[in-house]
Length: 189
Image: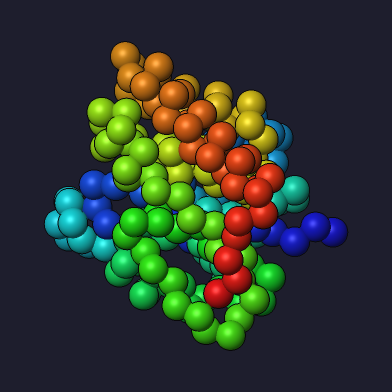
């Protein structure tokens, strides 16, 4: 039986952390015919406070919806890295926002993949799509959710009238991840 994928997505309020988790879970459950759960947590302030989502994706029914031990972390802020980066162990995957997170060597064999998602979003003229760039990057690097399923989940989850921009952001992150994989430019923390 295949191991469940326990995914921690974290950053600060206003980065679209919860939506990113929702889209990843939806891609798995609705479009890839898998099982998924989503648990969210955030501080009392709407923007700027700590924010996290827990997503579990499995080939079989999920009996306990909370992460026991994440094997993938998507960390979009320095605080998120400091708080959750230590949860990963040998063989796990860490996806980071390159300009906001500077991982430290810790002796563990964690595959670290970095993308300047915020900068790429700013180049598109809308910083608000940083999370969708990260979702595309997640799909390309982990391949837990297929390209087509994740694309459909993005398209059906964003506000009406923003689909074109968000799909462009998804493609940007996905293509960056594919290029990164082909160049083997990962770090082991």
